Length: 203
Image 1 (cartoon, rainbow, N blue to C red):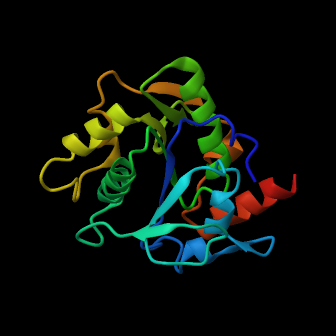
Image 2: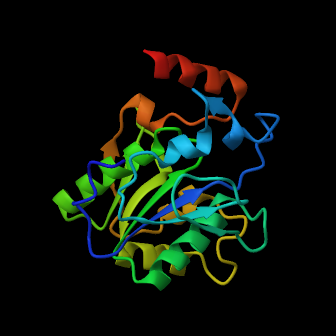
């Protein structure tokens, strides 16, 4: 599992966004296999062992203890799912919260890297950045106050229908931006992107 399990605050939580409809993929992409393992299970690799885990989406087999949550109403979008997960983590008393998309097969490794940056920098939040300079706003490491600010910014509708980018833009100060390697930020929306990751995984 993780090489980062000793670099945590007293309570660390991880929130995996796994509630998408997979319309572009054509079937449940999180069940798609890479070397005999579902995409969602790959995404959990390298998360710190001590992290309490919530998966926002339908229940699926995962290789570690997890709580399954759903946004309210179901289908409210990734921002609503993010807020549900953050609210759960805050309710645990988490001091640091990692977030990642369930369709990023190396998202857990990216989350562990963002955690190291957060703890080393003293930033209130860190966001992953892809090689074209765009923020990957589902790949976050947040201290408690930043997570609370996102939940507050979601408003009474709990971010139903809101974009994640708009929600994260409410953070003040803004997140520290950190460039992630291409394989760490790669997500899968289509069959061709899955084939691309399989090729990347073999190299």
